Length: 168
Image (tube, rainbow, N blue to C red; front, side, top):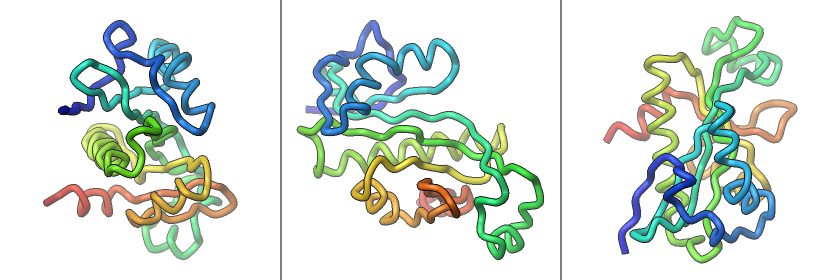
């Protein structure tokens, strides 16, 4: 079986078979993702098999993080003097329960980082930010050098670090 990552197409991709232990992630791909794309609120990319069944997905959109959420020393070192710092958000990254633990989450993560990095060359983005749904997700992102933002449950990875990760 081969897999590809492509933009969600509700007319082509099979969404109703996606199962995830987090009901909100399951419901999102089945019922909300297409609407978010239609309203330009998020872009959704799906990992699909040959039959176009969704095995995993992630979403990307823009956001700004207030300067107060970045460590003072980090702000000084990186000369972050604006009130809000432009970033790219991976709002959701989820795998079908049958695919978990097989390395496809890492493939989706690196695809999302590569897309975010490429867009940051045209539309400035200092870092990729993630919302981790639970401790297991937080541990997953920390394996890839994500750091915690102050006073939030979010993690971030600077574009400079992403560049070094994807430049092989």
